[in-house]
Length: 319
Image (tube, rainbow, N blue to C red):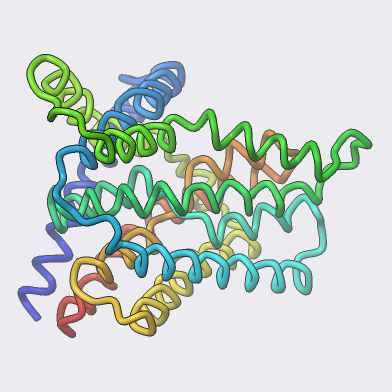
């Protein structure tokens, strides 16, 4: 059990320290909202794509063997989405709240918290597996998010054709997905290994990605929003922090996953609500205050949930 606790602390504590540093700097006025926005843009458009690209290109992982993991992640996502939709339709009154609630439950922060925790737990090998998982499930996240948030719109121009166009545009302009597709294409073609200046530059950009992303996440935490939860935001947070990880473990075991693969599935699903959920909710007319509350609470509390869950799974010899 001591080994399991040490494992959990090792994978979560570095992330908490970096987020704590960002929060500390924000409280002291050492970082501005402009810096956070610009740094987050830099990470999302340049650093994370470099990290994903080189993780795949440099890895010897057999990606054809990740099909079961991706299938399990897809099933988990649909269970959470359908369950949250059913709950929202029965117990959430306002359309502007319903889509935000659903997104808060099913959409996890894989690109930052998930990947960082997987890297801490399993190193480069786990990071490569997590990158492939994230690339596929991110596509599903975007499609389902547009579907659930579109119920708010009253515009005559907002049709299934316009929504489909929006989804397609988001997918084909997403730098993370483009980086993964480029990496798969590079590995599939008979091209020489990347080396020299290109590889060194890419490695430096990749090294910046997760630390800077975690610092920005910490600097973005709004304590006031986190401590003034409504009943609805707490319900969504329970779905994300407790129910989602339990479903992930159950589905993973049903698919026969164990070791690194079950660990990657758990850590990706157990991650806090994705930061993109707030941006998309605001853009599509959802309740952005509710989205901010869910994001803030799950970002802090969810890390402890990941640690507890990882310790239990490690103690049981499952990851």
